[in-house]
Picture 1 (spheres, rainbow, N blue to C red):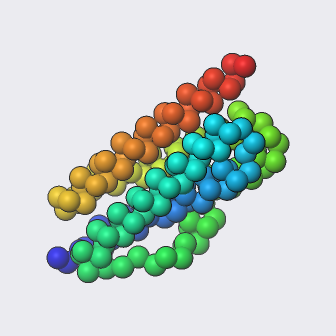
Picture 2: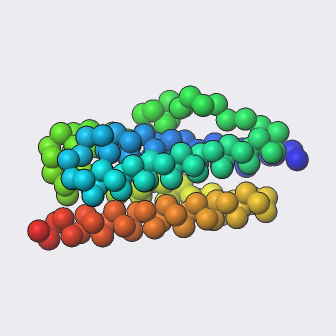
Picture 3: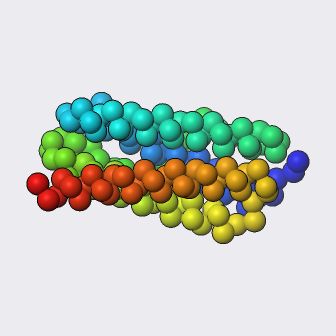
Length: 150
């Protein structure tokens, strides 16, 4: 199946957002002290890696491949940049705020993708991934709110 440039660009962008999230959560899981967050961040890093594989498989079925290396856009993406300083502060609320900020961008990217004319299987996968990312976002937000009220 031939894939048009807009579909390829959309899927590539989602892959980059998932790479950002996987890297951000992996970093957070290594540096955060709270065991519950460590476990949660590991889970979300694995989830994003799985999403990347799923999206890359869809591209492959359509005759395209996605490079394994992260793009400049992904490497320099600001949503996860401040996570390192939040981690060094050992402030649970700040760490969760930075994770939520990264998730805000991912949710937005998936919403935009769902507005595009994606082929059947791909649309279903993007819809499911959007729901998973939205659930992660909402969970992080709930934890952040709880941390703020302590």
